[in-house]
Image (cartoon, rainbow, N blue to C red; front, side):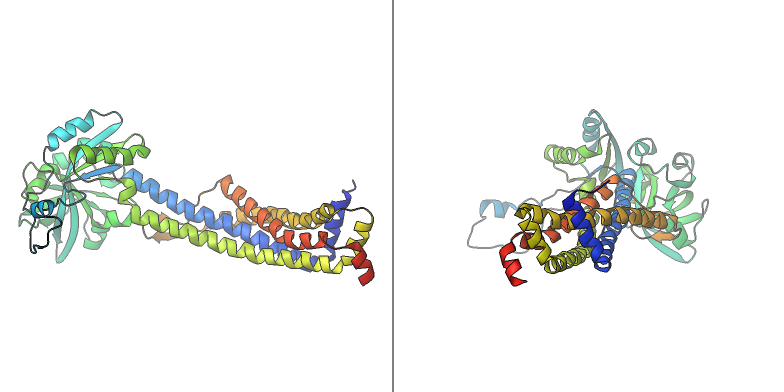
Length: 415
């Protein structure tokens, strides 16, 4: 089956300069392949991390602090005064959420919300000649299992062991490794309040998030209040929602209603999410640079063809080809390179992903993983194709426009 005349001319032009055409195809293919591979790797890590954050941590945390410190009376009355007072100290107040019982009752009446009271603080664990500084969280196991998935993360022991064992503690596997601690060991716990308790390790958990596993421990809420010497006090309320997208609106509502600082999961992980934005910017910049280099190759090929085929362009125009017909021929050349390069790049990208998926190694950073965490989606293939085809077409447009403006009379006279 014969090709349309314009398309046949475009193909012949590309075949005439095979080496340059192959280089341009390789550039487009590499750009598409690297975009697919890097996107799968980076978005796989990002989505896995966000899923673990949502899975491990509460969606909203209410803290015993305010977002903005209240202004001093002298500042409210004489805010624009000519005399400034220095050394003003805020009023000393007992930390903890006031009216916590009423707040818990109000939140529990809302649909799709699960709440758990918490008292968190610092603790020094002593085992043998090793001292470990950790975070201790006093929990109510019945409520806590509805808010976090700590029970699912237990490598050994059960959450109910906090009830059945006197002075029980559950530690992260990072804490256990640093201290050489095993389940069933007795360790000394020293709080900043000076309380010392002998505690038994009844469970070890692994959340997959290094920071949590290396520093977090759990005890009964009442036991944490004894350790911190703060009876009947909680300093945090953990909230889990059926719809995670409602975390930010709910946090704003709680803060307006009760005055305490309420942080949704997006705010808690803001620094890490900001790193993801930088990662994506680097990824798109790298791939764009590869495609730009490929576009220069396409531009060079078509510009050379226009220069070499000047006489042919004059003949075509003398035969009745209009400016847009000539322009279309050379734009088609860029489009052909873009389309074929995209198809080759798709195959290379798929192979790159499968190769990375076959690698098996221990990775520990923000999260713990066994090999690359990859996210496969047709969206990456569609975006890479659009970028490659548009770039190739734009690279062909400038020399195509120049070719369409050539005057056949000037070409014949010049020859």
